[in-house]
Length: 194
Image (cartoon, rainbow, N blue to C red; front, side, top):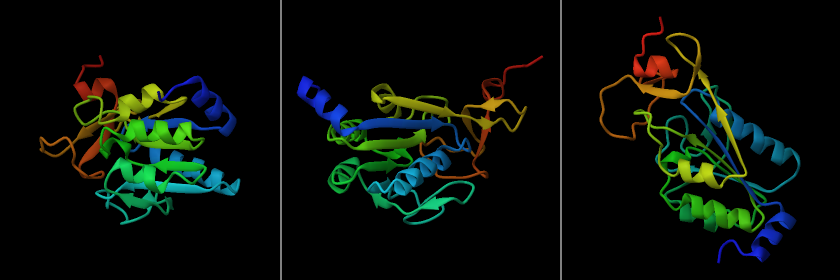
Protein backbone atom coordinates (compact mmCIF):
# COMPACT_ATOMS: atom_id res chain seq x y z
CA UNK A 1 0.00 0.00 0.00
CA UNK A 2 1.38 3.41 -1.00
CA UNK A 3 0.33 5.28 2.16
CA UNK A 4 1.16 2.91 5.01
CA UNK A 5 2.20 4.24 8.40
CA UNK A 6 5.83 3.33 7.62
CA UNK A 7 5.71 5.36 4.40
CA UNK A 8 4.43 8.46 6.23
CA UNK A 9 7.11 8.06 8.93
CA UNK A 10 9.84 7.69 6.28
CA UNK A 11 8.58 10.71 4.30
CA UNK A 12 8.58 12.88 7.42
CA UNK A 13 12.10 11.74 8.31
CA UNK A 14 13.41 12.38 4.80
CA UNK A 15 11.49 15.57 4.09
CA UNK A 16 9.70 14.49 0.90
CA UNK A 17 6.90 16.73 -0.32
CA UNK A 18 4.99 17.95 -3.36
CA UNK A 19 4.65 21.67 -4.08
CA UNK A 20 2.50 22.94 -6.96
CA UNK A 21 2.82 26.37 -8.57
CA UNK A 22 -0.15 27.07 -10.85
CA UNK A 23 -1.95 29.87 -12.64
CA UNK A 24 -2.60 31.31 -16.07
CA UNK A 25 -0.10 32.07 -18.79
CA UNK A 26 2.15 35.05 -18.02
CA UNK A 27 1.55 34.73 -14.27
CA UNK A 28 5.14 33.91 -13.25
CA UNK A 29 4.84 30.14 -12.65
CA UNK A 30 8.15 29.26 -14.29
CA UNK A 31 9.86 32.25 -12.70
CA UNK A 32 8.77 31.01 -9.26
CA UNK A 33 9.82 27.44 -10.08
CA UNK A 34 13.29 28.65 -11.11
CA UNK A 35 13.55 30.79 -7.96
CA UNK A 36 12.82 27.80 -5.70
CA UNK A 37 15.19 25.53 -7.61
CA UNK A 38 18.01 28.09 -7.47
CA UNK A 39 17.55 28.39 -3.71
CA UNK A 40 17.82 24.59 -3.44
CA UNK A 41 21.05 24.73 -5.47
CA UNK A 42 22.42 27.48 -3.22
CA UNK A 43 21.65 25.19 -0.27
CA UNK A 44 23.86 22.59 -2.01
CA UNK A 45 21.01 20.15 -2.53
CA UNK A 46 21.11 17.85 -5.54
CA UNK A 47 18.56 19.13 -8.04
CA UNK A 48 17.19 17.72 -11.31
CA UNK A 49 14.77 19.65 -13.52
CA UNK A 50 12.46 18.19 -16.15
CA UNK A 51 10.23 19.54 -18.87
CA UNK A 52 8.19 17.94 -21.68
CA UNK A 53 10.30 17.28 -24.77
CA UNK A 54 7.57 18.95 -26.86
CA UNK A 55 8.14 22.34 -25.18
CA UNK A 56 10.78 23.94 -27.40
CA UNK A 57 9.40 27.50 -27.43
CA UNK A 58 12.48 29.19 -25.97
CA UNK A 59 15.10 26.45 -25.78
CA UNK A 60 15.51 22.75 -26.54
CA UNK A 61 16.74 21.86 -23.06
CA UNK A 62 16.51 24.83 -20.68
CA UNK A 63 13.41 25.84 -18.76
CA UNK A 64 12.96 29.51 -19.68
CA UNK A 65 10.50 32.01 -18.21
CA UNK A 66 8.76 34.75 -20.21
CA UNK A 67 11.26 37.15 -18.59
CA UNK A 68 14.15 35.11 -20.07
CA UNK A 69 15.29 33.68 -16.73
CA UNK A 70 16.49 30.14 -17.38
CA UNK A 71 17.79 26.98 -15.76
CA UNK A 72 19.09 23.81 -17.43
CA UNK A 73 16.69 20.88 -17.56
CA UNK A 74 16.25 17.44 -19.02
CA UNK A 75 13.51 17.13 -21.66
CA UNK A 76 11.53 13.89 -21.28
CA UNK A 77 8.81 12.12 -23.25
CA UNK A 78 6.82 10.77 -20.30
CA UNK A 79 6.46 11.08 -16.55
CA UNK A 80 7.93 7.60 -16.05
CA UNK A 81 11.27 8.99 -17.31
CA UNK A 82 11.21 11.46 -14.41
CA UNK A 83 10.96 8.57 -11.97
CA UNK A 84 13.97 6.88 -13.55
CA UNK A 85 16.14 10.00 -13.82
CA UNK A 86 15.05 11.82 -10.65
CA UNK A 87 15.17 9.13 -8.00
CA UNK A 88 18.71 9.82 -6.72
CA UNK A 89 18.35 13.56 -6.06
CA UNK A 90 17.00 15.67 -3.22
CA UNK A 91 14.88 18.09 -5.28
CA UNK A 92 12.99 17.49 -8.53
CA UNK A 93 11.56 20.40 -10.52
CA UNK A 94 8.95 19.86 -13.23
CA UNK A 95 7.82 22.62 -15.60
CA UNK A 96 4.76 22.64 -17.90
CA UNK A 97 3.23 19.78 -15.91
CA UNK A 98 -0.11 20.12 -17.71
CA UNK A 99 1.51 18.59 -20.81
CA UNK A 100 2.53 15.37 -19.05
CA UNK A 101 0.55 12.13 -18.98
CA UNK A 102 -1.86 11.11 -16.22
CA UNK A 103 0.86 9.12 -14.42
CA UNK A 104 2.59 12.31 -13.25
CA UNK A 105 0.75 12.46 -9.87
CA UNK A 106 1.81 8.86 -9.14
CA UNK A 107 5.41 9.63 -10.13
CA UNK A 108 5.45 12.68 -7.85
CA UNK A 109 3.96 10.66 -4.98
CA UNK A 110 6.58 7.92 -5.34
CA UNK A 111 9.39 10.49 -5.37
CA UNK A 112 7.98 12.39 -2.37
CA UNK A 113 7.53 9.14 -0.45
CA UNK A 114 11.24 8.45 -1.05
CA UNK A 115 12.11 11.78 0.56
CA UNK A 116 12.39 13.92 -2.58
CA UNK A 117 11.09 17.50 -2.57
CA UNK A 118 9.06 17.74 -5.79
CA UNK A 119 8.23 21.21 -7.16
CA UNK A 120 5.78 21.25 -10.06
CA UNK A 121 4.68 24.24 -12.18
CA UNK A 122 1.89 24.28 -14.73
CA UNK A 123 -1.32 25.75 -16.04
CA UNK A 124 -4.23 24.79 -13.84
CA UNK A 125 -6.78 25.55 -16.61
CA UNK A 126 -6.76 25.24 -20.40
CA UNK A 127 -7.86 27.99 -22.79
CA UNK A 128 -11.51 27.01 -22.22
CA UNK A 129 -11.20 27.55 -18.46
CA UNK A 130 -11.34 23.79 -17.74
CA UNK A 131 -8.95 21.86 -15.44
CA UNK A 132 -5.85 20.93 -17.44
CA UNK A 133 -4.22 17.49 -17.64
CA UNK A 134 -2.82 16.04 -14.40
CA UNK A 135 -2.83 19.41 -12.60
CA UNK A 136 -6.06 18.88 -10.57
CA UNK A 137 -4.75 15.59 -9.13
CA UNK A 138 -1.37 17.15 -8.40
CA UNK A 139 -3.03 20.04 -6.57
CA UNK A 140 -5.10 17.60 -4.53
CA UNK A 141 -2.09 15.56 -3.31
CA UNK A 142 0.32 18.48 -2.79
CA UNK A 143 1.43 19.69 0.62
CA UNK A 144 1.29 23.23 -0.75
CA UNK A 145 -0.31 24.94 -3.74
CA UNK A 146 0.71 28.43 -4.81
CA UNK A 147 -1.68 30.05 -7.29
CA UNK A 148 -0.09 33.00 -9.05
CA UNK A 149 -1.96 35.55 -11.13
CA UNK A 150 -1.13 37.59 -14.19
CA UNK A 151 -2.60 41.02 -14.94
CA UNK A 152 -5.69 41.14 -17.14
CA UNK A 153 -4.78 42.91 -20.38
CA UNK A 154 -8.35 44.24 -20.73
CA UNK A 155 -9.00 45.81 -17.32
CA UNK A 156 -5.89 45.43 -15.13
CA UNK A 157 -7.47 43.15 -12.52
CA UNK A 158 -5.78 39.91 -11.40
CA UNK A 159 -6.01 37.41 -14.25
CA UNK A 160 -6.47 33.68 -13.75
CA UNK A 161 -7.48 32.65 -17.29
CA UNK A 162 -5.43 32.11 -20.46
CA UNK A 163 -7.51 33.53 -23.31
CA UNK A 164 -6.63 32.12 -26.73
CA UNK A 165 -6.40 34.76 -29.45
CA UNK A 166 -6.10 32.43 -32.45
CA UNK A 167 -8.72 30.02 -33.79
CA UNK A 168 -7.63 26.49 -32.93
CA UNK A 169 -9.86 23.87 -31.34
CA UNK A 170 -7.02 21.68 -30.02
CA UNK A 171 -6.41 21.74 -26.28
CA UNK A 172 -2.66 22.03 -26.73
CA UNK A 173 -1.28 24.93 -28.76
CA UNK A 174 2.23 26.04 -27.86
CA UNK A 175 2.37 29.78 -28.14
CA UNK A 176 3.20 33.08 -26.54
CA UNK A 177 1.72 36.58 -26.63
CA UNK A 178 0.69 36.14 -30.27
CA UNK A 179 -1.58 33.24 -29.24
CA UNK A 180 -2.68 33.97 -25.66
CA UNK A 181 -3.39 36.78 -23.25
CA UNK A 182 -4.20 36.76 -19.53
CA UNK A 183 -7.73 37.76 -18.54
CA UNK A 184 -9.74 38.08 -15.35
CA UNK A 185 -13.01 36.16 -14.94
CA UNK A 186 -15.21 39.01 -16.19
CA UNK A 187 -13.11 39.70 -19.28
CA UNK A 188 -12.61 36.00 -20.05
CA UNK A 189 -16.34 35.29 -20.03
CA UNK A 190 -17.29 38.67 -21.51
CA UNK A 191 -19.29 39.72 -18.47
CA UNK A 192 -20.38 43.37 -18.52
CA UNK A 193 -18.59 45.08 -15.63
CA UNK A 194 -20.91 48.08 -15.38
